[in-house]
Amino acid sequence: MSKIGFIGLGIMGKPMSRNLIKAGYEVVVYNRSTKAIQEIVEAGAKAGVSPKDVAEQCEIIITMLPNSPQVREVILGPNGVLEGIHPGSIVIDMSSIAPIVSREIAEVLAGKSVRFLDAPVSGGEPKAIEGTLSIMVGGMLADFEECYPIFQAMGSSALLCGDVGAGNVTKLANQIIVAVNIAAVSEALVLATKAGVNPEAVYKAIRGGLAGSTVLDAKAPLMIERRFDPGFRIGLHIKDLNNVLETGHEIGSPLPLTASVMEMMQVLKAQGLEQADHGALVQYYEKLAQSEVSRG
Image (cartoon, rainbow, N blue to C red):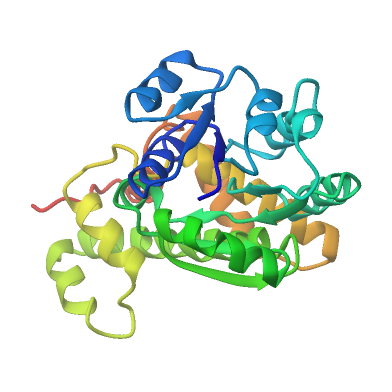
């Protein structure tokens, strides 16, 4: 088995690296927070002292970081992966970033004969812990096939979507659909509540029909129960929608629904709900309607 370097031990990276260890991989980890490093070392990993150090020790490097600037810095910046990596190695960026940045990083790495896959994930912290993430990959088929067993250790599905950048384009599409779905569920449940109909009854009645969706099943019960502790934070969804809008503007693809939901999320951020689950979008509608969704 190849030795894997894992950089970025946040909400997602920590359980993902644990699952690699459980699958039998030798894992070298790095994170700015030494507490997170210690937790994964106790689970069986080895600690690296920098991205460069991790790259010097490993043939495959995985990054799981907040956004494009952090990925660029860790891979291409001072004391970064590029300075330590060996020709023939593979970098897998599993962060959700702008596709144009994925392509930029891949081009720089190729100059050192290093391969690159962009492989963002969907499923949030619960599926990261379970090892059942959906993984969307961009890159060369041969590199994807070589890394497929690694993806299997962290996810229930991994699909090659196209060349480098295609994984992040697919993730952006995913985040559009999730955001607009959550807004639609919020709008519908607030309407039902304001009309005097039990929102839980509405949810149960419609979930088996065409309106049924994974988003409806995941978020409607939590809205009704007033549970907004994060599975996926509003602040992170804003980050993703920023990347959606930036990409859409670059290629000339209008995104009116995405722009509308982005402004709703910006309102909630301004109200101090940036760290709440994106299902808290229902609170935007509740304030407009002056009616609160609950089991009642």
